[in-house]
Length: 75
Length: 167
Picture 1 (cartoon, chains in turn purple, cyan):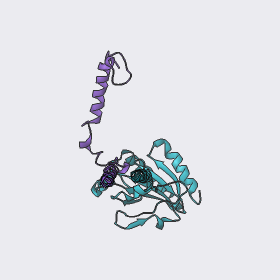
Picture 2 (cartoon, rainbow over the protein chains, first blue to last red):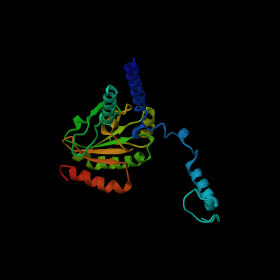
Picture 3 (tube, rainbow over the protein chains, first blue to last red):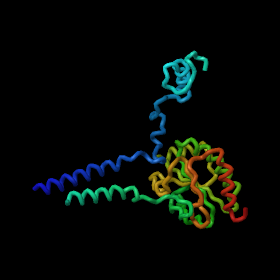
Picture 4 (cartoon, rainbow over the protein chains, first blue to last red):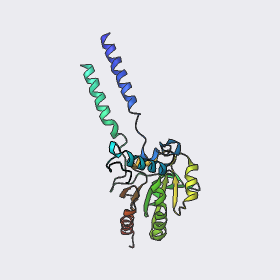
């Protein structure tokens, strides 16, 4: 009885871990849907860049956006 | 002890799994074959192009650098086509309409084939978009290029020219 339980358990574990094998990231040629506009975090990349630039110059003293000036708004 | 053996077998299976699809475009080895439909639904096979220098390019409508590579591939095809050079661009879009829209915007004066299944990029183990594989007249891989960068244009052209029968 114990042996059966062990075998069943082993098969169950094998089946469950094999399921992980299908969870592979998309291949380079499968990223068409990820490249579509509704999948982007920013609606406008250029606008996001400007917003980020201003945020960076204002908030640089508090850090978080890399290296920069002292927060005078002049960079 | 049975459990131990079972676990050993499972570990072996797990370690071998990544080797299952170990086919790729390796310089010096034969280029993986393909038979794909072109814009007129005529089948183009790599084997039928034996004797040509073939530039196999994997592209998609959503890929930015691919858009930049098309004028260059047009120029190469025009310049070296008479000497047996052939560009075969493999489209990997899931939706054919996306590819057709791209081709309406960006002219392609070379062979374009379509593989929505992804079988060909899988066989070539494409690592980046775009990717190109230069195949020699014997059907062997000469060069694998990942991406399309402006600074590589001249080196690629020189490589193509060196492979042509009458340079």
